[in-house]
Amino acid sequence: LRTSVLRELGGGRARIGVGEVCESVADFPRSYRQAQLALRLPAAAEWDDRATSFDDLGVYRLLAEIEDLREVERFVHRWIGSLLAYDEQRGGEMVRTLSHYLERGGSYESTAKALIVHRNTLKYRLQRIRKISGLDLSDPDTCFNLQLATRAWSTLRVLRTRES
Image 1 (cartoon, rainbow, N blue to C red):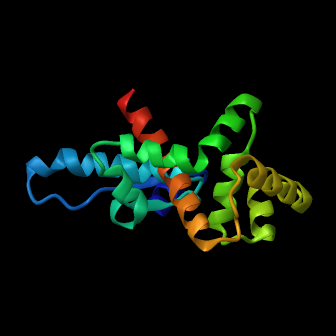
Image 2 (cartoon, rainbow, N blue to C red):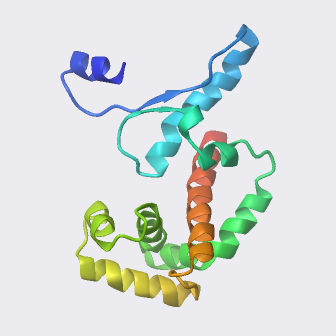
């Protein structure tokens, strides 16, 4: 579908969100909401343009389905709150940098390429992230929680814009 739309439009970019199959008319609102999330969450997470099914969202799907988001917000604050505050005060890119670094399994080369920065710039940012957060980026449990926190943060941003 995405390829056909792009061909019809003569190229460009397109992102498609797909909700779950509806068994009845009563399921349409749920499926529509899922399709919106499948459309917007990948954009917030800076995934490539593509068609995304709600079923393929992984942990984003779980986070988006949580009714009371206060505990998610507390988790995000616990793990990346200092970086969010730093970014807000200084217009920085620490959370975005950390997110890309973790999503790429700690690869300096692919992270620097994705962020369009020099490798030394990335190394400097990661040093700053370690200093600001006080966290050890070589610890697997810490990295897991940080990655979950950055994904939760992306999900919360999308859910908040939907509510506005």
